[in-house]
Each structure stands twice: as C-alpha cells, then as structure tokens.
Length: 236
Image (cartoon, rainbow, N blue to C red; front, side, top):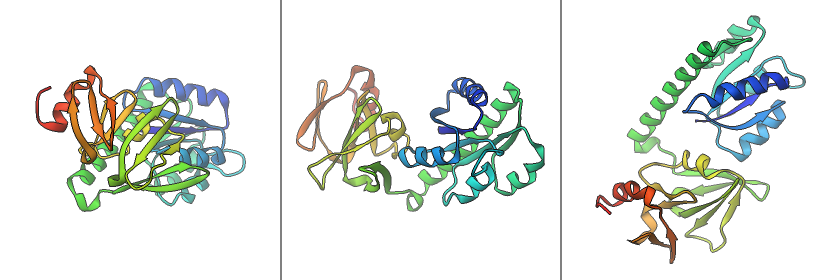
C-alpha cells in the first residue's frame, strides 16, 4: 500500500517514518507537514493509506478527511483522545494515541492491510467493479488514461513515461514505477524489468531477453522469467 503521513511536528514525522519502514506491506510516498502538502502529494501519487494527525495549524485532520471526495484508508495518530468519536464516525481504520507503542502501531497496520487486500480481491473478482482507467498528474493537470490505451511504461527514477497506442507522444508523470504498478490490474500489466511494465494486450512477440511491443523492443530481465511464464503460460 502506498501511504503518506500528515503531521506538523518533525519528530512525530520521523517516528512514524521509522515505524513504517518496518512494515513490508507499506510504501511511504510522502511525509507532509500540512493538509495542503498532503493534497499535492495525492495529486501526484496513488495513496491507499493516510496516517493523519488531528490538531494542526490551518486545516485540521478531521476537516481534511471530511474534504476528501474519495477517501483512502485513514489511521489517526494524535495526542488527544477527545476526538476519537469524531474519528470513528468518519469510518477510519484506527485511532492511535501518542506516544504510540510499536506493537499497537503494527496492529493498526495489519488491520489496514487486511481491509485493503479484501477490497482489492473483491474488485478483482467482479470485473464490473474494476476501474478501467487511472488518473495521472502530468503537465500541471490530472489526466485520465484508459488501461487499454497503455502499451508499456518506462521507469526513470522518480518519473515514468507512459506510452499510449492512441498518441505518439508519451505522458511523463512524477510517480515511481512501483507506485504505478500497484494501481494497475495484475492480470493485464506485467513488470518484466526493473524499468519496464508491459500491457499484455499489446505484446507482439517474445524472444530471448526482448519483448516486441508497439513496434519497439524492450528488455526483460532473467529475474523476471517467472513473470513471462505467467504471461504466456509457457516456460522460458
């Protein structure tokens, strides 16, 4: 799960960052000092889980969560217990009181992971509920991209280039390839190299170390041979 932290206290951010690094199922994509910074981060990255303080200057945590049209999973982390009822009325995953014991933190993370995986399995089991598009932040806009229009994706450190069948110019978006991979259907898009994801629908042919797709050849690594087997049903 991609997650972000929102807390105006630097020490609180550091402690949460350390705890999150201990949880294999979490990928921290942003540490934010305000709700405004969090909104910007959510425009640039897919966010599945938010660790959010409540008492913050400007927009507080409760106001921020209420403002979200589509809410990720929320875990409040605060020094104040009087907002617990308000928090749970927002259907949050958990409400943690500072200082948070590691055992209590891990329990909340496990709960969030279970909810996330159950929701993902339910969506994958029902094709009618599966989204057929993603929104990407590019050229100062949120751009809607249909899954079936994507031929392949190239990762470039903190950026990706998304190549489309409908237009010759690739979309460049400030998001990691790992983050983007987590947003795409696992039975349609396959990571074949540390820097490449392919859409199986557009694959033309596969030969030793190379995949031909959309008129170009891209590499696949030996470490991804099992992925090629899953794509084709054939041993490589």
